[in-house]
Length: 98
Image (cartoon, rainbow, N blue to C red; front, side, top):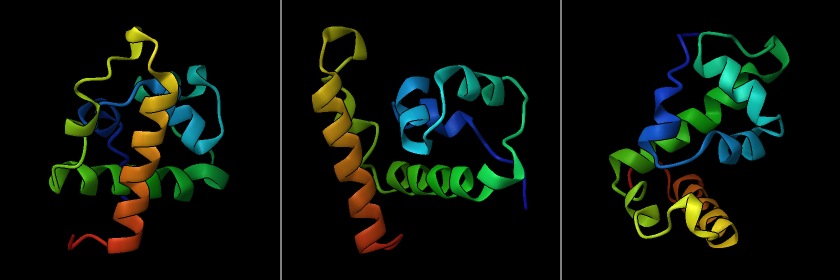
């Protein structure tokens, strides 16, 4: 498996906490990965899948554009989460050739 590109998280407009929620780990764990750590073999495929889907959402200009007007500091957590979920669902349903 190739090296995981965790810069996709920030480029997609997600916080580390939001990515952590996607893969069901803590923000601290994601921060460890972003700073050079590696997910366990058990999580590697899951993490790689989400990173790939986020990259597709970036390539297709779904993210971060959908989150631009919802800064995490503005108390829009629920709205941001719904937007992220909808973007990833669109990528999964429509595929990389949206």
